[in-house]
Amino acid sequence: MSTLRNPLLPGFYPDPSVCKKGDDYYLVTSSFEYFPGIPIFHSRDFVHWHQIGHVLTRKSQANLDGLCPSRGIYAATIRYHEKTDTFYVVTTLVGNAPYYDNINFYVTASDPAGPWSDPVIIKGAEGIDPTLVFDGDEVYYLGNRRPNPDIPECESRHIWLQRLDLPTGTLVGERVTLLEHGALYDAVAPEGPHLYHIKDWYYLIIAEGGTDHNHCSTVFRSRSIFGPYECNPRNPLITHRNLKRDYPINSTGHSDIIELNDGSWWAVLLASRPDGGDYRNLGRETFAVPMAWEDGWPVFSPQTGCVEFSYPGPDLPECIWEPEPACDHFLTQELGTCWNLLRTPDYKTFSLNDRPGFLRLYLNSHTLTEPASPAFIGRRQQHMCFTARTYMEFIPAAKGEAAGITMFYNNQFYYSLMLQSTETGISIVLACQICGDNTRLYSAPYEKGCVYFKIHMRYQSIDFYYSQDGQTWIQAGTTVSGTILNKETAGGFTGTYIALYATADGKDSQNHADFDWFEYTGETN
Image 1 (cartoon, one colour):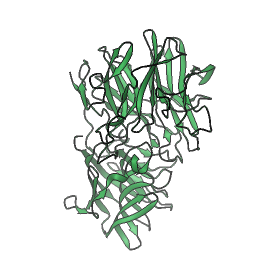
Image 2 (cartoon, rainbow, N blue to C red; image 1 turned 60 degrees about the vertical axis):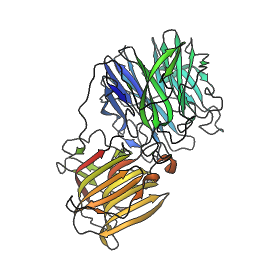
Image 3 (cartoon, rainbow, N blue to C red; image 1 turned 90 degrees about the horizontal axis):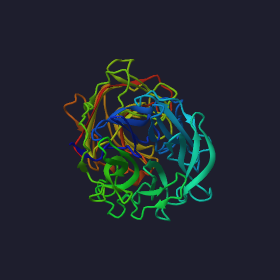
Image 4 (cartoon, helix red, strand yellow; image 1 turned 90 degrees about the vertical axis):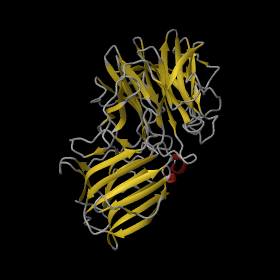
């Protein structure tokens, strides 16, 4: 029996949902403004997971153009419909409107590795965090809504259910309110509902309290899918809001449960790991806990009531996947699954074919400060301590052109280490963006058209380096703080990325930057 270690998915992988087909388990998470959207993972033992792709890989599925940070693709639910041998993922595209201009939709696939279909939009569906419920011959849509538009969106949400005509995405029949509030009457943000028909009961699990320190999962049950639902007298199912903010795991909630083939029950949920106080640079991560049944109610992490860093794994045949290499040499025709773009560009931002063995970034007018699609290829920070290195060839052709590496949280909070054309010539420049103010922390002349970059982070201390030969390193300025790269400082719902980046700074350009390889090495969390 293997040991299950948490986080199951380290780094910015929030709002997990899980399903199974036969001996195979599949898990998805939200992705917000990053593209491709909705990463999907596969496991056979529920302990070892590997990414097999993304659900949303085309602009026709989800247009993220112009979205502000932490808008885009919110929590998704994955379900397998045995009768049709089809996988469904239902989610919400959240827009920029003041009260969320939401589009709820689902996509389908016969193979969860893809391709996934174009979206079927669920007309008239309010709210976020939807679920599809397959119950016998019936299909239901489960979501939440704000009953009073004059009340702030997070303060009042009803959980509601309605029959769904699956082929057309049309809601039919009466819309039934299952819950008018959470288990805690005044709790904000009842959301993330999942509904399960287990034996003679319907169990409704929701998140409430907001996705921060007061976060939790609660459960209700009914003999009828339409209710009334009784509240578990032992709620919440899981929370760490009773613990100090610097407890090693906090903000637990947003759960989905599953019975494994050995008969054991498990829940996946999100949580965060603070670092240096209450800073959570890695964002909200995916964790798993064992589940028991007692008096007809689920009990999460039954031995301690808390999310632990490890548990004895389920009694399933061990299946260990080949680990992803630490260094990407860009030798394939497509980007590896760990990489993301910002939003959905209409134009060519990169190529793996124009110079085989290199990732070529094409400079465009956009910068990291805009809600646009700059030339940005990034991967999640997954460790509190890590080293990232790359080798780049680039000759700036006009003032303002720059290329290099960035540690990026959102368009108002990031660091960038660039080879850049400045007012005094071509230089290595380390800059910091905080609340719209860009500060140059370091600048030094640099004459070559090739450079090695390195980032070394230990907890909240970040050192940026550059080198001509990859052996002798020069520190760009002094150690800087990682505390700007997290929700507590910058807000939002995402996590920190390390990205390769190029820009023409507001101008059109035919120039490009070539990256030969990128290496990310994390220390054990």
